Amino acid sequence: MKKTKNKKKQLLLHHNQKHTLMESVNAIIQAYHKASKGVLNAQRYSDYAATYHSTSMEGSTLTSTQVTNLLDLGKTATNKAFWEHQMVVDHYDAMQFIADKAKQKKEITPALISEMATLVMKGTGGEVNAAGGSFDTSKGDFRKCGVFAGTRTFPSYQKVGAMVADLCAKLNKAMKNAKTTEEKLELAFMAQFELVSIHPFGDGNGRTSRLLMNYIQLYFGLPPGVVYKGDKLKYIDKMETLRKTDNPKPYVAFMMSQYKRFLKQETKNFLK
Image 1: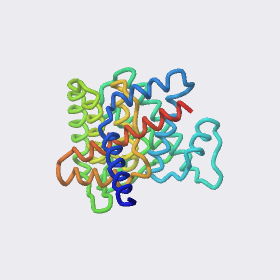
Image 2: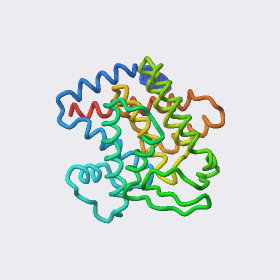
Image 3: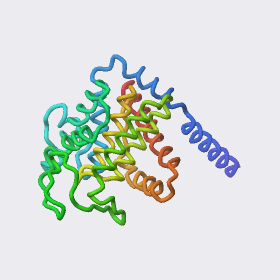
Image 4: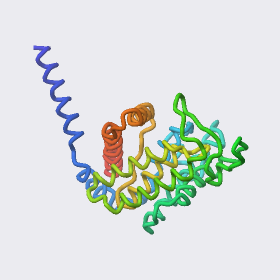
């Protein structure tokens, strides 16, 4: 009897997982919009959540409550470094910047991406002296040095300018052709992957690439999403797998699941 119950439980769990994966992203977005309608500062608090997850992945130890207190009240967290607070404030400012530019339907350019990076690194960046010359991470300068993460080596700095320009041209063309919600989201996810794979800046590449993803989502009138801080290792693994196999499906599926999960969580928060 116990075996039968366990088997039924496993089948039900599998069914629920499958249902979640198959659930229409359009339905989830519609529910999100419906729940957020009339909620004061709904988008602001979603942006706080995005800021919390993105900065946590890059070293900030502020909790979600501390992030809210900082951005809402200007209240700093005890025993947390100044740079952690600055990272949070800068990221939130960058989110406001991309929301404004998305409303204006600004074309994606290297200058726009550099502006995102400037805001991300405004209070924590600075001048770097490298073999290729000096550059300033707080001014959105492209790097003039080699960079690597773990065993991953990114393109040489001499190629960065041309690669970013090519990416912008490719994205602007693709944005004109994207029709369905799924196509628009896949484009946003792949833009994030492509930019972080170029790693054009001395620091702030992860945050800037996720802001580019959010920019494209906002450009299309979609809610901006996140990558959950607790799923950082999975996120990195999916990107590495994509680089090795050139198959975007597992990465896109992972990012879509993160997007759906975030919107569903925010919808619950709005209904509390």
